[in-house]
Image 1 (tube, chains in turn red, orange):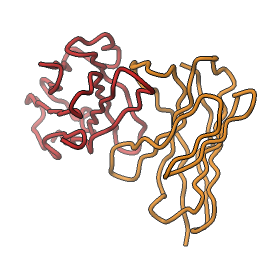
Image 2 (cartoon, chains in turn orange, red):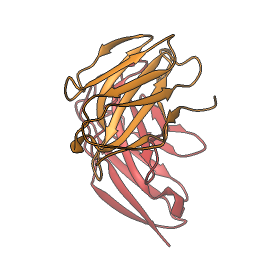
Image 3 (cartoon, chains in turn red, orange):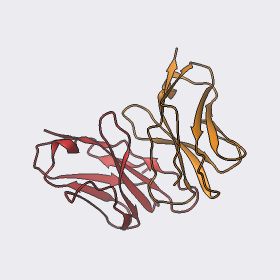
Length: 114
Length: 111
């Protein structure tokens, strides 16, 4: 596609349920990032993929959070046993490995845990 | 990656130039300056980047001081749609590690 696509755009879930968030990066972009942004806060890095491997997972807040990427393309971020503090906008970005490496962001998934 | 310092907020009159400063006094020789912005309820948008020469594209101009310790993003004719949070980031070009976003500058363009 023309840009980074994320789905769903909005998700409301009950506390304790698991959720999966999806990111389709720009075709050919080998680097992929997940960030989250709580209401009124800055962007918090979660994880970075280079191809299908994740050399930097330092931002994942707990073991309830995991992410995978298959075929060097689509990525899913999974949150298990969701808590209210997980409510945030989850943003995905992709970039080329070569060149300036500017990242292009999707519109995000707004997660609300009730 | 080097740390950046930006003013928390700025105002600009519509149609005038908006000049957004950024200090990056610890920048390394191989680190680029990147600018992004985030309009309310949207994902961040790449604006421009540079190493040591001034850069211009269809969105903005980037002026980097000779010692590279600071830079200024210039929006030549600000519109109401330019109201956003502007982030200055430094990192090695092609370094596909994480982008570290600070608090940025909230630019309010006023009619």
